[in-house]
Amino acid sequence: MIIQFICRAILLGVPLLYGSTGEIVTEKSGHLNLGIPGIMYVGAISGVVGSFLYENSCGNDIAAMNPFFAVFIPLLCAIVGSILMGLIYSFLTVTLHANQNVTGLALTTLGIGLGNFLGASLINITKSELPSIALTKTSSFFSAKLPFADDLGWFGELFFSHDFLTYLAIIIALIVSYVLNRTCVGLNLRSVGENPATADAAGINVTKYKYIATCIGSGIAGLGGLQYVMAYASGVWSNNAFGDRGWMAIALVIFALWKPSVAILGSFVFGALCNANNYIQGLGTETQELFKMLPYVVTIIVLIITSMRKKREHQPPAHLGLPYFREER
Image (cartoon, rainbow, N blue to C red; front, side):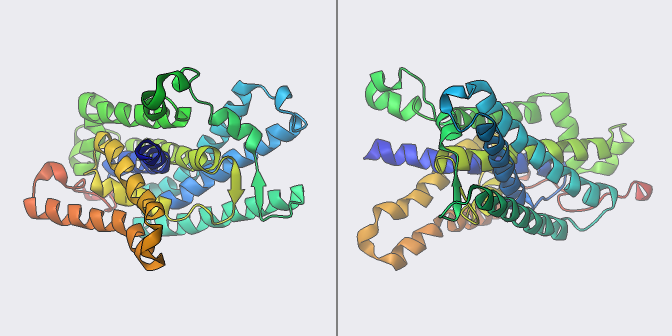
């Protein structure tokens, strides 16, 4: 039961890891993107639309489906859809200097509305009796585990029985951590988030870094939505079933102290906290609901502790959420 609990926690935490890693990249450029929930939602529905079209082109015959295209098409659609959302946010906040908080919240509303519209359209096309659409054939390719996992007992179940998007999330987080801390590109990006005027004076193209960081961060976050549908939900899309995972991903950024490597462990902790309510069924519905609050409570505690310690490396970028006007430099 302990192994099952840990595996379930990892499965629940991976979408949060994608969302938090993408948001960290964006925030390192000085932009607070509260549109992450909507971007993850669009990434999910974009992947669903891509897989739906491919499954229908193959006549819903799994034998006729190419494993590469069955994975590549939804993956590409999810990335493109979420990057387009990132471009909208970048244009409004970087070029037009719109308020970042308002723009992010508007983007979340837009993303959820767009996702529900496309989801309802697909449900009507399939004439499903249930308010959902099942893409179990595509999901089987995403959920495939390593062939030798069953031969290794509990060790194989714990480390080698996950879908490939789980391993990809960890790899991306480690790469982002390396780029931010060990490369000139990462140094330039962090300088843009800390003091864009100084970075501009040093010859760094502030606008380019903000655009690229926001779009890359959005693309990473969109993969979290796709992983939720294809791995956690077994390919079943239902409108408004995504829950508050986008907001939890933003909370995880604070919990991880803006460090992608810490977000890996933090996402699994959040997943365990979210999964805990399923193991306390004998304590009543009220107690289960209280357990759902734990990720946010833990985030608030971490925020208070880091604020009291006042260590600069544990604080957000100094220019986070503030517009940059080059003419005022």
